[in-house]
Length: 432
Ligand SMILES: NC(=O)c1ccc[n+]([C@@H]2O[C@H](COP(=O)([O-])OP(=O)(O)OC[C@H]3O[C@@H](n4cnc5c(N)ncnc54)[C@H](O)[C@@H]3O)[C@@H](O)[C@H]2O)c1
Image (cartoon, rainbow, N blue to C red; front, side, top):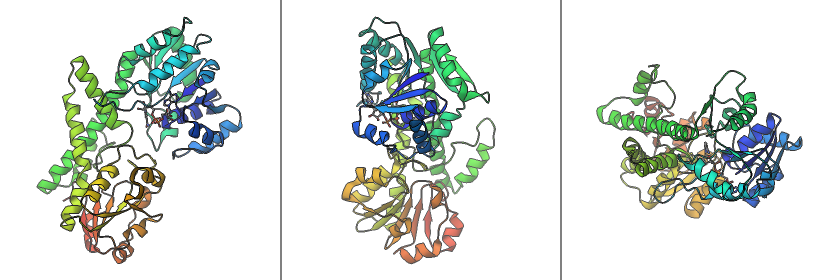
């Protein structure tokens, strides 16, 4: 099938490459000229495991191309996906400027009947706005669908190629048939394609992210409680996670959730709730609790050192989670700011997010290529991302390098007893 994907970010690029891998002819369009030029040279602008070979192969075989000409991409295609960003507006609601700009372009280039699919995470009712924006520009009939994306950064290729489920909101048999044909190769093992109406599909995406965000926020609150009462949140996690009604996934406490989705989607769902008179007060609290949690690591450092002024603090991990270079809404942004404001000097390391970090922090922090270099003369180490390469800790080397052996481990990677045995003042999340 001939497919256009408009917006070539984490979602658009992965989906474009994934659809091409199944034999479709895909053109990815983006207004970011620099990004498109890099992609044409097969340079991947983001870190995502397994993505590069997929892009290179499909480009070489002529099934995947990149353009800044959104209109031309639309004209060449039978199915058009809108996968542009939907950042939060000032009141927390999703900003639909990019989505509606693309809808306008689609309307102007509707040279034959097409299926137009919103892939971006958009509030309920957006498909109707997209329909109106297209219809204002064309009399050619078209079909609309909503296809929220559930991929996880860090495992995006795998998630897209082998989805747990595919959610499709449709209002016409033609849209259903076209999208069934497009997606059937991805669910040969029997995972479901769930057809529903468009508003239900739009709500499903937010409901899924809201539940996951709430789960993390709840575990983080249990962690605070555990510290106060002398319990161990890791034991509690195992104790509750083995209940099949609860399940083991997404129960790890940490420095608060970040990334491009949970924070903005929770805010947007709260805004939708307020707008339609269905208050999402549980989620309002989740959001506030998460913001509070992001401040915890810096508070722990300050407490351990008796103040921050003049202290040298090393940070391991800047990305909002492992296996990505994405720092959007990462806890590291809050932690580094708090440390700097308190007068500390900060040295940072991340295996993949150093370019991103330079964009955020500029000259305000020092950067090291090897993680132990950050410990030279440090008064404390803060671990913020659960990168695998951080899981083994060289006690002797760290002790020799650090001025003071203080470790705040916001991912509970190390064993408290062993850390203390090796002479570290060690604090983690919920394991007082
Ligand atoms: N990142 C994720 O893990 C994830 C997962 C599921 C859903 N989503 C949703 O998917 C959408 C895209 O997210 P993302 O992380 O890929 O965003 P992103 O910021 O990485 O990429 C968005 C891209 O859209 C391009 N763009 C903006 N306006 C455009 C226009 N008018 N025409 C063409 N291109 C335009 C930008 O240049 C950018 O390259 C969002 O709604 C997000 O909530 C993201």
